[in-house]
Structures are given as structure tokens and as C-alpha cells.
Image 1 (cartoon, one colour):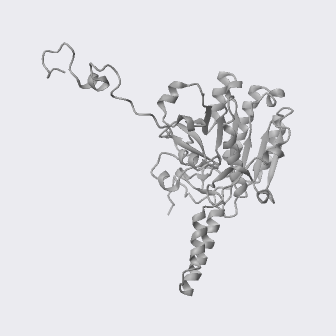
Image 2 (cartoon, one colour):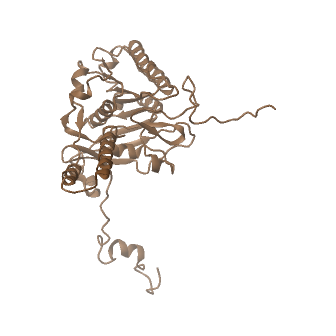
Image 3 (cartoon, one colour):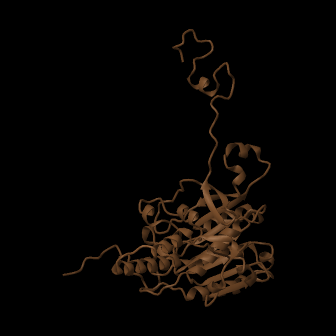
Length: 377
């Protein structure tokens, strides 16, 4: 009997070339997402909740950056609000012991690694619970159970999908010990052929295969179209480099984040850059003299900047993902934690306006001025 040809492939099966057979990546820092795509954290928990697909499953598995995806952040020349996103992305990879590739127009990329934030300390509530445990007299068999639970919580905290980072403290030296970090300086111009070769060698060690022990690599590019980078290349050569980089990411266990000042590109070239991104984000500075915006938002003095979502990833699906809110406010809590919140608009004062007509409520529900009867609306 001839076997019937099936038109589907199991999610657990992965082709040697990392093709569309697609299973979930079994690696530290990765978790399953929608449409057979694995996700990694952006380093900011609030941003991970913005990035999931609009699917009922996303409420269970959460969100993040899809493995093989390209994230682009459009910078604002007025304020460096893109730098925390870049630092969190890199620091989260080091916490998960993921290989890191970093390219920057700075002359010393290693000095930038010293500015990565440290993991925020755990809450004091767990420490107080452990201190009270010694005062309680419990059976010896339950004490062993509590010790196992405590070890499990510590391991879970160590390999948490997304960690909280403290902006005031630099990263610990232990994160850099034994880490695979490759740095490239673009201060003398971006030689795209050699840069692409370095990316290809870095990604070649992150090929997709079946089994455990996989690694997810991270590539970070800072201000890729800065004047220092464009000294030795043209706009079209840079665009060709992005296309080649995206094709390499699609068949590997790697994600890339690129920040670029879109205002330095021509309008047509900026649109082409945005079209190549799987996830497109822009950051905007807050103007101090914007009285109109200050009157609309209740928490305007506490806002550091704005984060706008232009595009979300739609890998392995033809349905575009539409975010629930396109713009979010960037705030710093207690000068150490960056959070994203939805904009809170001040309520409209219904009593404002002409008192003779009853204000806004009178205009909507009241009768006309020349009406002969109170029942005429």
C-alpha cells in the first residue's frame, strides 16, 4: 500500500539546514512562541509584553524577539533613549551565557561593555522568609522539601527569561568570564565585506540542529548609518549588507538588534531600511516646552521619552500583528529601573465652556437655543 503524502511537518522536527520544518530551540534563555517560533528576551520585561503576536496563545507563553529575527530601533538625535534598549539586549545575552557580537562606531568597543547594567538585587522579602524559617520547628522531611524548593527558585532566578537590571550599577565581571564576545570598531569606516564575513563566521557556530545543547547568539549594531560608518561605503552597499545579514539570521539560532539615526538617511532609503526589519521601534525625546502635551498627559513630568511601535514580527504567518497601543512612555523608577507604560491622558473637563449653554454636556444633550419646546433636541 502506498503511503499517503502529508502536507505538514511536525513542530519537533528540524531540518539540517534549519529550514521551514522549524522546531522550538532548546537553549537557555529561549522559550516557545506562536506559529512554531522560539523567542528570546529583549532584556526589558515591559517590551517583551509588547512584542508578542496577537494570538490567544501569546497570553500564555508571553512575548519576545523571535529567533532569526531582525530588530531595528530608530534613534532620536535629541536624546540617547536608544542606549538603554541596546544595553539591556546585550546584558540579557551575557546573563544567559549567549555568544555576543558587537559593532559600534566607537574607537574602543570594549569600553562600552563596561557600561552594561548589572542584575538588580532580589527583593528583601525572600531573605526575611528564610530568616523566619529558622524560628519555626518543622518536621525533618519537610525541611528537605523546602531546601529543594529554595534551590529550584535560585536556579530559576539565575536563568530567568528576562531579568531586571539596575541602571546605577555596572555589570559584574563574572558575566564576562568565559563569555564569547566579539567586538568590531567602525570608527574608521564600515568595511562591509569584512564585517559581513565576521558575522558569517559568528553565525556559522549557531546553526540549527535537532537536540539539546543549542545556543542562541546575539548581534548588536550601534548607529550603523552614522557618519563614521558611511565613510567607506554607499547607501546601497549598506542596504545590501542588511539583506545579507537578514538571510543569515533566518537559518540560524541568532537575533540581531540595530540602532540607526533615520534622519541621516534619505527618505527613500530610510523606508527601505524599515521594510527589512522584522520589529521596528523608534524612540522620541520629550520636549520641555510642549505645553499642549503636558496638558494632555497626567504623568508628563515623570516621562523620560516615548517609545513607538511601528512594526511587529510576523514570521511563519501571513496575518500582520497589530499592537494594542502604538506609543508607550519611558520612565525610570527610583533612578535604577526602566519601565514602559501606556500613555495616561487627562480627563476632559465637561464643565468647561460657556456657562449659558451648560458646557460640553449642554452642547451634546441640551436643546437648541431657538427651540419652542424643552422636548426638542
